Image (cartoon, one colour):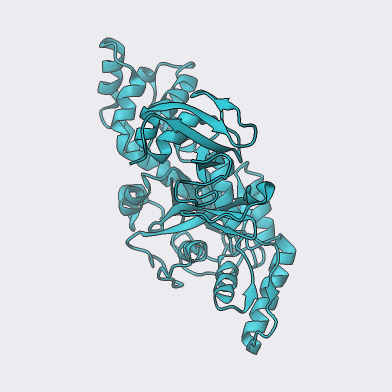
Length: 399
């Protein structure tokens, strides 16, 4: 899974990236700090099944802390956008090229309205964050339209007169953008009911591309700088637009995670509170900063960064978490690791899908699966549920 972080330049994308990954991408209060994409690992957070089963787990590719399972998610922080990006203005072409493989997008927005359309600092409240949301989305849609529009008439004629499926031709054109034929067909079938694609105007082609982007690249709005007035009213305005909007304060999350890594506080990303450790010696500046963060968390419930990651995985991409094991009694792999893995799969996934995710050979030789709770056999088409613990039985080894 690849999640892109995008938005207008100089709104805190790299700070959000650093807060989510604990890396150190360059951050500065001027446009185009990010030129080359930053890539790192964040984590979705869920309640682990270890406590239900009463076991002490030792994950291999994920983390379990106090009954919370943290599952890796790959993030890419790309260059910011300015109006005209789809025509190459600013670093537009580079952004759009870097973001094309993303399964979902986190749109970081300056909810305080303190950066103009070019990313330059300005007084808080002087800009409309909803305008930023709309222009950034439109730039992506226009870029996608420019790709689709090339040889549109020829492509449609081939579909209509040579018996080829238009969704296949368009999916082939879009193969480098991680847009599936199924997504193309779904959008195409809805819009083509009213008018044949061969008769579409430029505006109708644009609407098709917009709907396709919304389907194939779902977006969550990370309403950053939620601690700066008048962010609250701007966030409500964005929510009323029907978008998924989550208030966040990336700098606050970054401060907490760094304080925790230094042993000053007890804090897990996504917690709704933190505790200063006994014996911690804080400077007056550190104490003041933590007091401000506490006031923020008391007001909005959290720093929002972990909530954005979780919303991307579980609300946008509709994922479930499944735990594969090789011994359904001891809940171990062949090395004795307890609950060693946690995989995120799309809702509707089957045991055979899980086998394919683990290793292609397991899927090739798939026989059945076993539910570790009920000990019942599960067929290849059985739909898995969130929190399932499953043993895969296959004629093939993982080798």
